[in-house]
Length: 193
Image 1 (cartoon, rainbow, N blue to C red):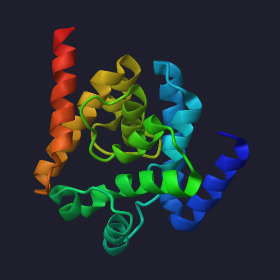
Image 2 (image 1 turned 120 degrees about the vertical axis):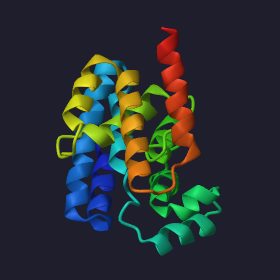
Image 3 (image 1 turned 90 degrees about the horizontal axis):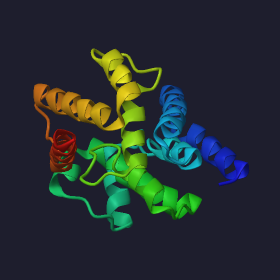
Image 4 (image 1 turned 180 degrees about the vertical axis):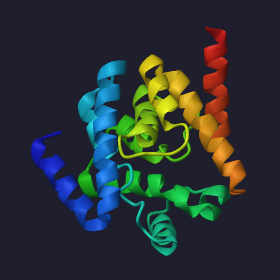
């Protein structure tokens, strides 16, 4: 991916995002590149997926749902009800249609950064985790998660899933089944080692 494409994406982000979200996105880019270097993933792929992961995050419920209908994206009942989760799916579609990104791993990393899924690639785990640990994040447990990210990608992703599940339960919102499946798969894999 050339520098011109990166510049075009960054310019487009500034047009669709509030400044706070743009700052967060740049933090995710830095964290994703760091994690890609640490865990042997392609840094250019990590940069692109991180840049685009929240492209649709500031879209309204109506905008997200109408995009899904207009572009005939598959969305289950939980995604439609907990519509905030749709922004990953919509952002992946925009990455493909507007920026002509065809790399499936990048598109999956963008799409699945909200829920995770079974059989996540290294890049998908990196984007999922980078979203939680970027430098601008401050919430109870973020420092422990950053330390865990230094130790093991899978252990850190498992911790992030556990934190998410607890949080969603506490606020009594819908929990996407992919999050549970992804968490259980990583836990099983870690217990086998």
